[in-house]
Image (cartoon, rainbow, N blue to C red; front, side, top):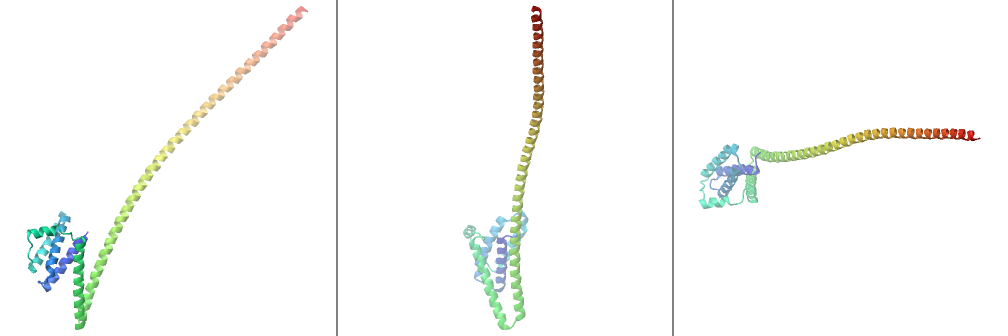
Length: 237
């Protein structure tokens, strides 16, 4: 994706090339070329190996621009001072681009006014079409940037939802395992309770039978004792 710095660099170098074609002694060229050097240094720092050819193309265009404008390279101290100046992405670089756009717009308005007074309507329509095309290009770039930012937000939201879903699944799985263990333990306790209840009932029946036989035995002993007592008393009489 083309960065804001690279877009500013392309715009500025295109404007400088246009100024050189019209007036190579324009007083603004020196300041613009220095800004181009600052932007190019930052582009070289930010670029990777896949963008080497693009950087070389920018360097060649800058060299051709300097040659056409008879630009004198600054001294080593001046270059070091340029390296320590604020980057092109800072407000200083933005101010430079605003100045370039303002100069371009003033030039465009001046040419448009001149052509309007001279009656060259075909050129006016062509330049108006170019202006509309530039505005359309800026709108498309802004729209593309908004779309990319929206896509990044959607990806981040999707990732967040995925993480939350995975966490919820883990919690649900853990709760399901706990419920399953609880159900198995409940079944086991119910089976053990049924077994113990059966044993208790069996012991209860055995105790009832034991007491019944003891009572029967006691009744028999009392009956036999009474019969014997009656026989003894009958003999005495």
